[in-house]
Image (tube, rainbow, N blue to C red):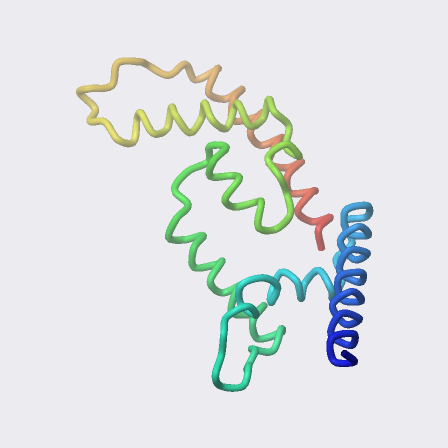
Length: 157
């Protein structure tokens, strides 16, 4: 019976600490070692039945490996500037799509669609002509939004 009580105590305390860490993070967005560890080790990784002793990669090594994997995926899987592309780039570092100015995201979607139409068609199949004034104004709005995003990115550090 003592074994069961010790086990229950440990589970309850770990649950309590993780609940408080997540609650704190949700309120402040301030990262802490518990959140990092839950992300690195929580869930199925520990639930796998093992015959050999459990050997977990040190968290610093795992974070470095995950960052390298993330960097590789940026080059391989990002092919645009539309909202879906922005989400894939920004969510992993803590910026959600609803954190971005919706008008800027709409402009990015339009810009990405227009660019795709020109980039993936031959010169003989292009049916519209760009208005330089409109394009200039669009680029100015995009640059303003990129400046705002850059400030948010800097604030993450």
